[in-house]
Image: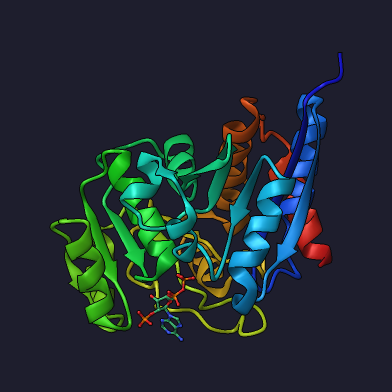
Length: 273
Ligand code: ATR
């Protein structure tokens, strides 16, 4: 009998530096499945046409910027992980239909923290913050505050989730930082080539706090450097990337992958890139 083959891929624009092909090839090898993971860079003007072509070639795909919201109008059924967050990063083809999921944040939180009592501060109110906010709510976390440059964006997010969240400006947050057990940075601030930037000053954090940054280039952002100097625990951006990928892989193939040495391997790759 010929083993099932899994043609997968990623749609987005632009896509040049994606680590996902490497991650999913490693997953295939780990669980002894055959499959491919291709990059499909789609220019916005030809999105619909290209998407129809890609649908014919794959059994599932990831979606990244700028299409995580746009894809929803092409999806036939949304999983709970995607319904609330308003963004889809993983799609499964079932018959001729598409099912949309959002694997950002949910397993990351469950695996690494799994504590509903943690007081969480989200930095940012864009698409990534939305996915993580929703994942926290699905994990039963209730104490979530937000700090963002534009307060209206944070207010909109909180309204969409009907949540009772405190919202602070980036300037005001320093006075409240000692409240938080977990601080998750969800904006692109600090990403190479602007890697000298840090979105807030962490001088006043609790020494036992955990600081997590979704930016993974550079591996250790300025914000994480600051957190480390303060004695806090840090979580690099690529750990979240790996967890969302592993959950997507499980949805497509039914196989659970162990991430054991992958975080270290990915670190080496990132240092060399
Ligand atoms: P994504 O969908 O990737 O999250 P986005 O929707 O553009 O991207 O959201 C980016 C987030 O980064 C927002 O919270 C944005 O703040 P605003 O709501 O004020 O726009 C934040 N952000 C981006 N550049 C920033 C900067 N230079 N300083 C502070 N916040 C910034």
